[in-house]
Length: 506
Image (cartoon, rainbow, N blue to C red; front, side, top):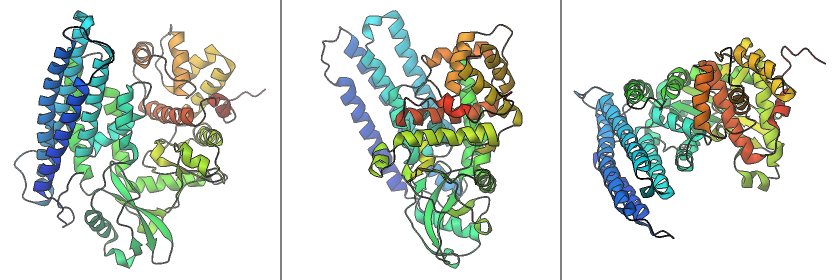
């Protein structure tokens, strides 16, 4: 966040600073766009290419100016609505305007480029697509950082889909995984004190003002209890529930409108996922219970750590837990420097998740790299359990069958397992699509053409249950991490050792 608002009686907004930083960000982006569009290329360009690039740049710059102004207005409006006199505007309107402007910018830009490529292919070079991807990715990133809340969560979700999105999107949105701008300490201190029912000094010897991590819904601070025990303090942002409600309402309108304008563009699954998961993640009491349940389920393993919750200090908006530190799982250099073999980490990661899904029926369903740490051993640390969920026995059985069938090359068993998992597969399925789907779902391969796969999947299987989507999202993230650590690992063979539910045996 570039500035703040009044929360729990603490004011931290500076309108002049909000406007100054908004202008600075706008000018920086605009200059970067101009340099990129006008940069010299190794080969001479056909006549008309540069002129069309300038036209694209002008249209994009107009939208950029509009978005910068709307983002500043939204931040000031949020400050007024939370900390000062109530605005006459609906709470959701400024955020909806930012998102609508962003959606219009991206839609019109890609539409114009596609139409030009279709009618005048000689005027569209690969560089034109690169420029558009780069501009669009930075716009989405900046809007997410400015609005916080739901858009950051959506960006984090999109950033792990390297099989679906161009590299520019992955590069920019990956910055949302663990580098979300934190809220000022004085705001979070007041929120913690409100949950504790008194000053922090009554519970803590000290709390570090700089957060260990800042996320889309809250942030975490290192602290020492008066007993001397080191803990992590996770506190929800004071205003986040209202922001999420406003964002989901605005996104409903935008997604419905885009579906009418561009039927092939399906954003409904992303919105469905956010609507299903965000209310769960906002309830830290649910998260504390899920942590305790998974910690108990994995208590027989000394190579996994789930932080212990200090229950008497935790509420629906606050969790105080055991402090667990380590090396970020995708930091190969850090792992090797600590004498930890990345290949061993990849095997451990997949073994732990296969046991959760295929034996225990409980899954840490948000394994993005910021939530996975590694200690020497190796020992895997699982953080952020807002999406840790119970997996239905029916899905556990179905996933076990899918794994066994995929390993054994049993096409009939694979189709039956996918049906049991919830895919409404017709009587004459596209076997090629289903085989590729199983490989992607189980993290054993990347989609060769993800857009084509998505269209074929929709035709072959229709709508997919939310529970399976959440499991599939988790396995997709695991697949991406595994490919970074050990691209040669046979994930299916690791999973097969745990796929015993319903196994008829030798």
